[in-house]
Length: 560
Image (tube, rainbow, N blue to C red):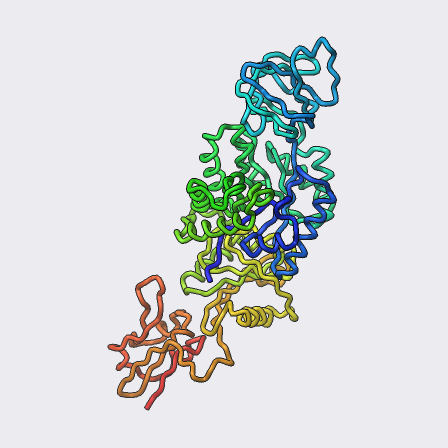
């Protein structure tokens, strides 16, 4: 069975909050759950998180949980009824806590939750409502309010967003609400924290410093949606643990026509830096109500895969849509189809390798491909080695093996990494590797004669001095049926018989190096398999050196 490489993040909500609904989404291909802290209470979120964990236990498949903080989102206050904005009309915007005099009330009022909107605003600035559906210009500024003139009308409802694309908003990136939500999320042991509307690397550093003081390890996902964040993307990438290309507010802030270019550039930078990147917003928007996506949406998902995104995110499609299960299933199908076209990988000479772990993992990926390995077993403590491995986009199946459940959940965001939880009964690395292989055989993920590349990663494995080691193992099933003959090459000569079991051959070329008469050859194709040159075989001296040199027992030489 083919394993999908890119991961799926899905927002949960009214349409997908029950345990059985979450189980359906996991079985459809969900890897990471998004909890939107902008909506609902802590009690709601606590129950949702508990339901996710229970669904994981029921299915024996852990998924990650991402708590998405609201950030300094400017919103319309609670309205008694929707407001109808008409072109060229004049309206007043003021903070909901202010009371205007009758003299000031020369125009109808739009209350806002943002106290500093008037202080930040300037005459001539653009004001957008509801993700840019409606727009206006600031024509007057007073002490407690601003006057706007509507340029694009519509119906404005409670809690809709207000964007100020050409105004430097003074609100801190981590609001008081965000801080309380952050503490709550950490108590719930979520696996990722997403920061909204960040503007520079300092916004990330402040939160990381707070986590450091709390002695909590939780990866930070920086959401790129402000023009300032796009401008400062290089320094943001250098400080964050992952990036989310949040195309919704980004489109409102910078203009939809610029979003595709920005998306492609950010994904490229993240790939080069080895930082996971999520592409989000309106991926399958029509599936909120329809059971099938549009062709444009399918192309959008596929192009994000070809650009190199590590994960794709669904929002309202799964949170409040009519077909949450179908949305995840369809996205998975589109990703699998897109991945049939191999992704272009960075040339080795251009990859910036900054650690032993990075070099080790890239080497493991190359070795696995050259010997046609069935899988790479990357034993890791914190998951960092698997993140480095994902950076090279290995085409071999990778099992990120760990005894830490939190690491299992976090690796669900890494491209091409299949998280695998395993608790060993020994500290001996060779014995532990054997136990893992035996378990994978029992699960029919590995079989007799499969080649696997084993690498030990970060944390405790590094302390034991095994992090910079790579080992190739050929699976030998001692209980294999005696009738099994394997994929054998046999050449009979006047002095006897030469046999090569291709199932066991590792193509290590040890036989080639010791044979003085060139009996052993390597194919010129990409597989580089060993074979017996039947024309040269008659020259065999039957000294058995090739048998002694073969580390896998694939060669047998029988003299008459």
